[in-house]
Image (tube, rainbow, N blue to C red; front, side, top):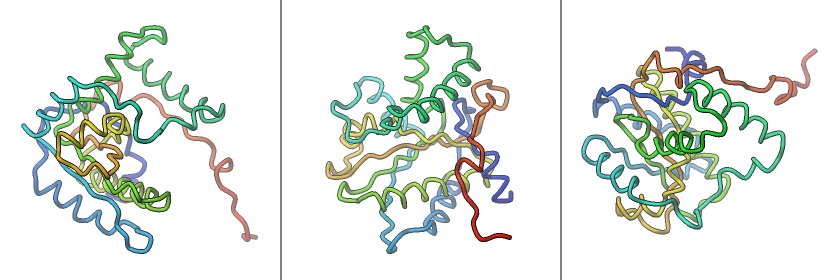
Length: 220
């Protein structure tokens, strides 16, 4: 698969097949992702990758838990600015519309959100964590590593869903897995094989126009 094809076909998948992912496939993806860009070669990312009973045990714990209060970091702050809130509303309307959940159907929306706790049925969950002393530059490096993981997964025919939602349960996850408390549980990535005909995997997504995000200077 060309890199451009992997980029174009990557999307957040929220319905996965009940089909295992071989260990050698996951090891290959994470091994190759070690070469993601890293400022000063700090390589700040660390991960735990779960499947089978280990994943089921964590999900049982999560389903019996409440979100952290307070949460260790806020991923929703841009929603206070109208330009970004509009983008959130657009994707939310498309996603909930695809699965037939009305805007005022609070119980159905809550149930859909709780599907995050079981990673939408994905057979593999990668959990990303790193020391809390890491600053903005290292968070950026972690993002590049996570994107590399997702593109390499596409190259293997797999699909993913990045889950910042897992950060809402960071302390619970760290306690369950025995991770250091001075680490940030940043996010998860659900990994598996998409259900091709699931409407939640096919709704249209929007991106702003190129000229709104980039200026090209120096060309004649």
